[in-house]
Length: 247
Ligand SMILES: O=C(O)[C@@H](CO)OP(=O)(O)O
Image (cartoon, rainbow, N blue to C red; front, side, top):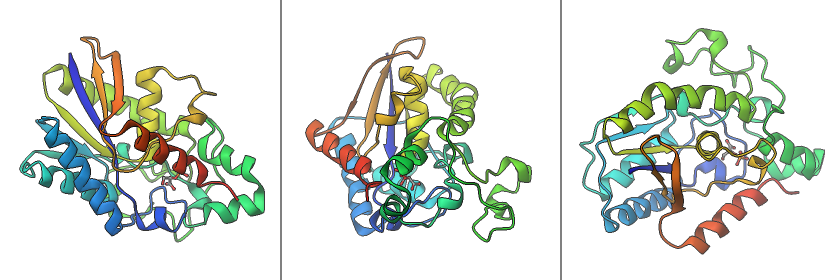
């Protein structure tokens, strides 16, 4: 049996302000830092050990990983960063307040933007100052590969190849992996691993800073998955994430 641990970053400044974030590179709040440290403490207390860590190229996930690994006294671990683990790109919604958008467009529209499988938010103009196309961290990509918006389906289309070409072979080679990523890049992976239907993924929300453990069989099919620690607290935190898009 293999084990894989996924951690959504701790609370970010834009989580606190309830703003759509996507590829915007915002920091953790002090609460986010302590959530990341708690995740590391829990993993250590439960006897988890890792050989390799992966994260996105966004600092809320990078720092979460670092604080969690520091609690485990293993900041020496090799860490690989890849844009394919980035949050879903939120297009023209990036920076806007979720509850304000719900007041303006209605809860149903915001739910569709946030959680539907294949309806992307309005796209950014390539010339929009918020576009990441001239950000040098994406310099190795063709400009058109840097999204102007994404629905979850688009995120699945980059996360699943990353799973297949990079993560799965490492796991099969016996590497124990922890991944610090984002609400929707984790939803993309969870959808794939658990084979969740397009309409059922709408109800899946990932809480900040709580390790999600997958036990996988020899074909990397999930045997079971669970949040480490208090299951009720994790369910409550996931429900709070769902409520962020209400007026
Ligand atoms: O704003 C975002 O980038 C994500 C995660 O914080 O939000 P949501 O939960 O609305 O998909």
